[in-house]
Image 1 (cartoon, one colour):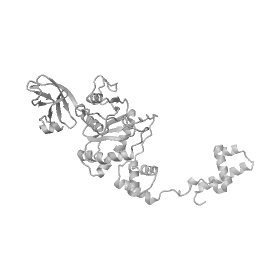
Image 2 (spheres, helix red, strand yellow):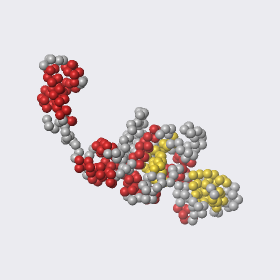
Image 3 (cartoon, helix red, strand yellow):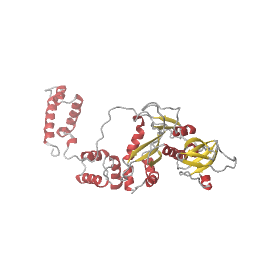
Image 4 (cartoon, one colour):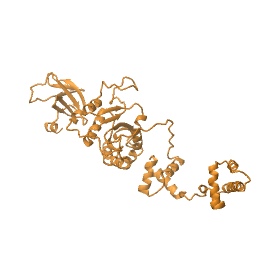
Length: 394
């Protein structure tokens, strides 16, 4: 058969001879299997093919030359050229989707991956060595929310790295909030919590690493000290949300894979959209990229329903802030950082001198001074008193 190589034809002649000798009784079938270095089961299968199809049945159809499933050379060259000229640096899965959506090229993901790796355009990922068992997802949305930050040059060409802060549901992988900031910290986490709770409601637990803005730890890699809550820990306790610490990178595998997916897609999409600043990126992400993620990568929860509950009029503005107590000076001022906050006169009391108040720095940079349930002053980030109308709106 001309479609097979000469070596394959010689092999088939040998197999035919051995099977014929076994069928004629010149050797046993076990001896025939040993001569061919096959298992008895394999020999029985090829004997059946010989009986059904004769000599042609002994050819291995996978070794035809060329393969009928072979991708045309022009198509292969076009795929490699598209990647090199328009999608350099994209991960294989992202590029494979664009091939189908924008260029109408229907090829298997495995073929595209092998072609790019063979051409040296995509790196081969080493296999993991340690076997780990995946932790089952929570059955309902809102039972556990993951949050973390990832440092990366998310805005291509910016020349500096930004932190992406994201809040992802454990049950469905739905992204509730994600934004870029200069550095992950207390205020960025409080801002994310505020966005999630205002949009969805209160959830049951928050799963985080043991960063200093989440927990105090007496020793590096040691257990967390729950007797000394951070600002984030205090806010979660006030809201009744359980705070769960992670003790290894593997335990945060769901978030690590999430950031891996976004690092392979978001920078390319930002570049394509012409986004060049933090403000533009933080408009693009909630308007375009989060909806794409929730449409494509969200999974169905195990059970129907939701564990989110309304926040029931909780003072989110006050709870989700950086809080510290201060004693009012004789001139009705309190110190905050290097700023002096002048408390205006109050209708319910002539002077607040020597009284203990609470100063709250909010996620938008504004500052409020509170005495019990009363807000006795609103200030801009610079320490300048806010206009009365703005203060009431805040």
